[in-house]
Length: 199
Image 1 (cartoon, one colour):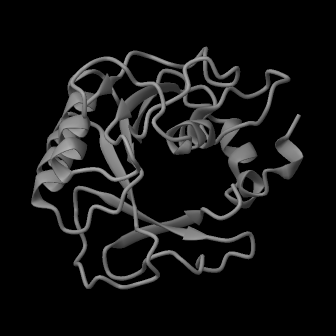
Image 2: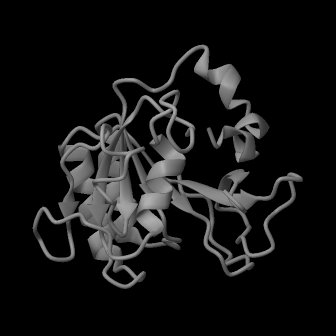
């Protein structure tokens, strides 16, 4: 019912892509702050995840960010509830790497490795990881197992001067007018830009 307010889906031609695939059988690891397991648009898509910070299976949300990212990626579509998502046939694997919005590179790397070892096809990392060799090594490990790692460009409106990382897809944010979001980082490490404002 909220599809009409989701400007980003037609902007990226998602409805055309849905004719070919809704990502059934794909598992997306949401490396973030945890996901609300009882959310009506997510509850049927969740698979077991991990709380890397506390070293347990409690992936309840520390903040709302992870739930929002999970919904953007894979909220159930065509179900008369809430919103649609880019990959609304995919499974969601919640991987909690923060208790307060900040995360250690070592925890992010551990989450990516756990995702790779537990069947994730995609790891979506909601943090700018800079030029961390720890995270890069984990991303290379996932790549070698057939998966892909995507990270945020970062939200400081700056060029950090990093070179391209062949193991990580860095994503900058755009607006509904296809402009760079005012806060989005930019530079040589950016691989793709995608809607990120007002999602």
